[in-house]
Amino acid sequence: METSVTTASPREGKQASFKDIQYQFSSHIRDPETCPAPADIEDRRMQIYRELFYNNVEDFLANTFPVLREITPDKQWHAMMRDYFKNHQARTPLFPKMSQEFLQYLDNERGQRSEDFPFTKELAHYEWLELAISIDTRDIDMQGIDAEGDLLEGVPVLSPLAWPFAYQYPVHKISPDYLPEEPPEQPSYLIVYRDRNDDVGFQELNPVSARLIEYLQSDKTSSGLLMLEEIAKEIQHPNPQTVIDGGLDILQTMRDKDILLGTQRN
Image (cartoon, rainbow, N blue to C red; front, side, top):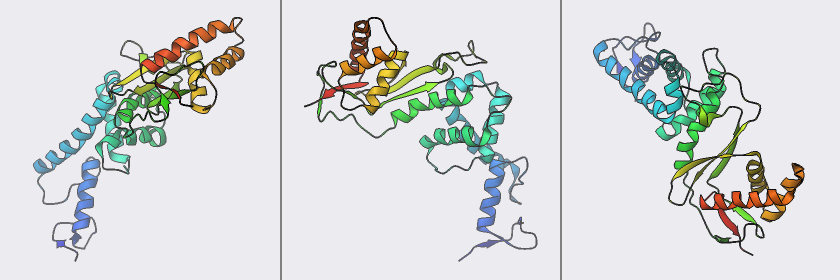
């Protein structure tokens, strides 16, 4: 049964249903400047709700994107938060998913505005990765993997909790003292990973290690040696053994960090 109250309604001339009041209440919380609060509720009480909802959202996003928050002037930051709070239609009520909702807002709704940094989207994505991989429910499964296998003779296995990305801007270096206006000639290759102790780390990749990661993602049959020989051919290195030796060091370092789990068991 629908509950009716005698409070003033946005539907002129009719009693407001409880659903109407809820809608008016939530609209006011999201956009208090243009959406009036329900009638007969004193503003002091509404102010509590306005601050509670906004501050919770703003505080969570500020903590999830600490560098973006630090480099963004207060007025500009809160204007962006208000715009997100007002206009974005979230598809989940879960707080851990809110940061992903904010990325969707940046990509699909906000667009690139003149007051934004040119690297805002990339920086936000980079900062989101730490939370995303930390709450990933998968565990490292060593079934079928030789943790001490020969990384050159065997087929190296990339951890499912090792995620590589390429960015136009060096997002891992951005700070109040470094705010690039143009992307450098070379993109930044980074990998975020979670080890068996559930510790999250980041590593910068050079072009060789980034190409090696691409092979590890797509080629599940070639040995580490074959992959490195192919990379040596691609870059036309005059001494392929140098690439192989350097690549072995990279593979071993990645295994030490649980980016690589070992090699496939025969």
